[in-house]
Length: 300
Image (cartoon, rainbow, N blue to C red; front, side, top):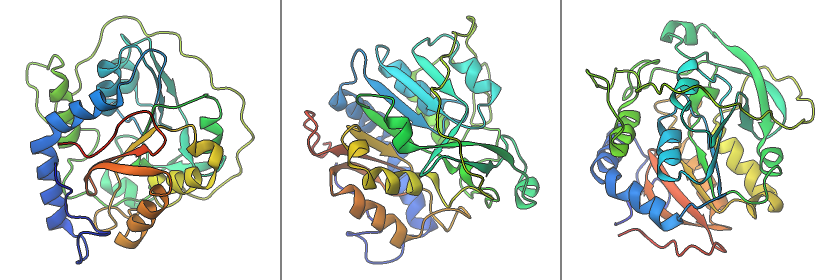
């Protein structure tokens, strides 16, 4: 697969909604093969640890859990909506942690799940604990995949032009669910709920004790940026993470999104220890550690 236009090295003009739409279209067209090849290439196996930050109702988490049934999947999301718990009830290898992840231990203000646009503009929020990514990673000897998609950190986000209002599924969530061939509801559409699983929920392990968080008025500007900056500044954290898959959110669509310059700075930091396997700019991208035993060249 050829690399797409990039706001960093391969695209001289500022990224905008039109180019982001092009990237979203490329993702929809190539998503089936690209995502399946990514999982095959990374070869998640028995005992591998996969971390999903920002699970929301669980579309990305289900993709990981179903594709890697012998791996341990840890979900970190401060909202932990009931539908997320319902959707993993048949998956004992999935562990839910109702906390956020960021660059430091603290408390922060998060948009509540299902909040309306007017409620968000008015500053509606729920205070929750945020754990330092370095602290989270220290619980594990190695992490096969760190997946980041956490626009929920914004206390007052603008309405995204490409996504339906929550609590509905985004087009990307619906696409990922369709790739899994999960049983659909009788009227499955982007606005349909995820198919619910019927067995009783597993007993979820408690988080190990962590340092007391310091208060914070609001969450910082973008979980992905905060996590990557902290991760790349701590050698022991970098050495634990084999691959990073993330969805970065642009400033032209999210009040806490990244500018092109900030996006490029994240790339510069990641290139110290990781190489880019694929990128759908401002949609999804995958980075693999240079010292990983996985031969992670460009996907073709």
